[in-house]
Image (cartoon, rainbow, N blue to C red):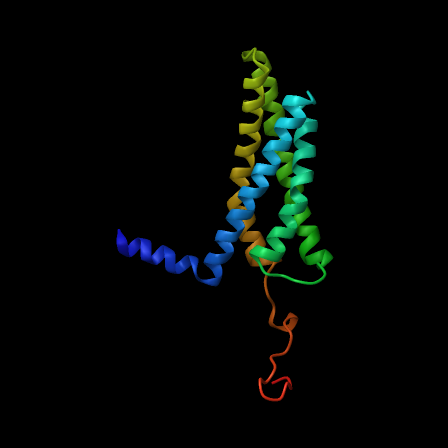
Length: 167
């Protein structure tokens, strides 16, 4: 057991492990933002699950993109529109469609079986969260292997510490 824990801890210190841990932490932040917004729009303002989920996902995707790009994958500078922005928002729209369907279905089911608006709100939130949970692992692979990959040609030339001349 101790050896397995040491192996996991060593892996989390690797580049791949750090990315996974940071991606996970960004996901936690995004889920909190999204779930609070969904509960607010649906539970407090009384909007439909569909409309509430669209607002929640779109608003939470913005900090998710920037946190993932800068912190999880360490990318700096201007975003590449075709390699980063378009794929990220494509995945966000897939997640939006899937989670909106799940939230709408949950609202319809819950309205037919539950009388409490609070319980309906919880069911809608769980359905949206579950939909994103299914997509979470797939999204990591896409972000890690396709979108935020560091290419050697994108990195600045190494400097010789003595002369300041690129090596």
